[in-house]
Amino acid sequence: MKMNDMVIVSVDDHISEPAGMFDKHLSGDDLASAPKLQTSDNGTNYWEYQGMKMPSVGLNAVVGRPLDEYGMEPTAMEQLRKGNYDVHARIDDMNVNGIAASLNFGSCVGFDGGRFHKAQDKAKALIHMRAYNDWHIDEWCGAYPGRFIPCGLVPTWDIKATVEEIKRIAKKGCMAISINENPTVQGLPSIHNAYWEPLWRAVTDHEIAICLHIGAGNPAPHASMESPIEAWITTMPMSIATGAADWLHLAALERYPTMKIALSEGGIGWIPYFLERADFSHARHKAWTHSGFKNTRPSEVFLRHFMTCFIDDAFGLQNLQFLNEDMVAYECDYPHSDSLWPNVPETLYESLKHLSDLQIDKVTHANGMRFFNFDPFKHHKREQLTVGALRAKAIAAGVDVTPKSSGGAAPLAEGEAPRVITSGDLMRMFSQHAKAA
Image (tube, rainbow, N blue to C red; front, side, top):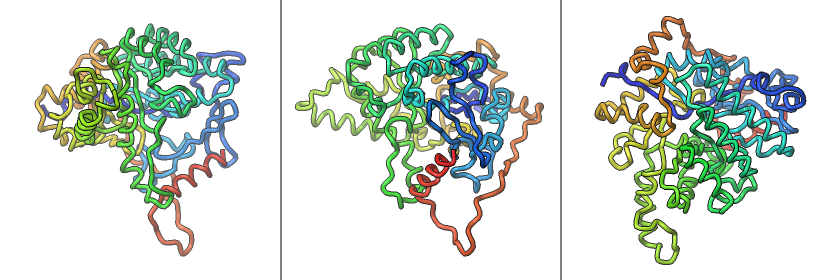
């Protein structure tokens, strides 16, 4: 298969939500009390909701910027590439990147809807979360049928309302939800508690996939505040292993053999050893741990239930034989700093060109389509969604991919020498932006 013949479906991208996202879905006090995009005295933007202030901070939306301007910037919507928040511009950016379809997680509300979970007025939070789903499904994804995979949020603080929302969004054609991988950080019972049984039943009955995105529940650890920030960034994808091990031991997987769980933004290269270790640990300790896995091994359960996703993982693709090739999918991560936009096809093709055409089709789009019950070919012919066809549209539309500067890298103080940025620097910068908001 040639590069331009690939069809690429990304199962993990992000939106920097536009200011007016609730305008068509709420009115009166419900609209007045919804999350609002505000501007501080120094021109930076932040979202405000029920007393919480959420600044726009960097590595979240840096696509299209020079690499030396990465970091905590940008902090204002006007600094962002338009594709971050405008669905029409997003389609242009997908075309120029050869991306046929995309699943998008939220930003200001949290990957898992965490801002609604933290809200004091849960009755309002439920109204606003439902409105967010309506905006995401009907307005953002609905603007271009066949180009976006809807992913809803659910009010897990109320399990009855959660089941009702799953039923509601399923009728809209939304076949995925994003929840916190470790609900105990939200003050809820662990996933091993009977509290969650209605959720397991609901997602299985409606064939809905559960997305667990890194960064929402179990934080990526860093050794100290003096650790170079690149040490922290290096291990961020692999930090999902903590949640993966916890979910792997979920007893409900035995009761619901068709339950689907996606490990979003976690990579795949680490998984063969993870599975080897899980099987070894079970074999050595099951006599006293009574951990389940009746007549099977942990690795077999993992390969049956868990979709694993990668951005740039040549090692993982070289070792696809140790994974389930039907449960591996590509993710672009637009507009985060790991995203290879607008050069995804070139990098991806180099990593998988050794695979058969069938395998290439699986990891680039077929697995994601099946897992999320999503078929872009109902709306577009396959030949219209190839890398070559989409890029031809982008060229015809004059999509500009020239890096846009917002003033250059932060200047050094007089006499200051360049130094390694540390984890502590990042935490301090985040705190400063939060105070400014």
